[in-house]
Amino acid sequence: NGDYKHVPVAAQAAGGARAMARALQGSQFRVALAMHIEADALGREINKFLQELQPGDAAVFYFAGYAVQDMGENYLLPVGYDPAGKDGIEFQSYSVKRLVRYLETKKLGTGLIIIDQAAGNAVMDKRFPEPGLASMDIRAANLVLALANLPGRAVPGAGTREIGRFTEAWVNAAAEPGVPLDAALRRIKQQVSQ
Image (tube, rainbow, N blue to C red; front, side, top):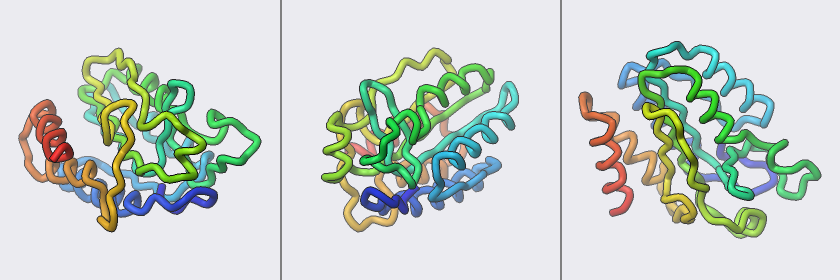
């Protein structure tokens, strides 16, 4: 989600989503790409993804755009999110905790949730003063939550780059077949830290 209506555009989100879709397709994943979507469509697309999963599957969920924490909970923001709206965040967004809990019930071979959070700006930082995303308890040993920055730390801006450094690191990792996930995670962390 990049073309937000009530907050600044998340400039690298669209390029990141396209690059990640190509990388996953190149790694033999079946990909459903949904871009610049509202809350209802975001919920429908996630539910469709969850319903198609079978026990033992390797599954990747990727989100680029605004992801925020509010009172210790993490949320993915649809393009129609309005910080001045009457409805609370939980009614205008999708809960990361909800996604995690559903994935934990799927008995996946491997599950990966990648959130490339858009960098903050004055509007978002005023509405959500807690930087970055909150740390989460993941109960399933085969499910990994990968965030663009350490929990509670703000994501730095990517300037004029087409895709963010975090997504770029994932795309590079996907280009190396046969690398175990733990080794790929170490390489991604090192690349982003540099």
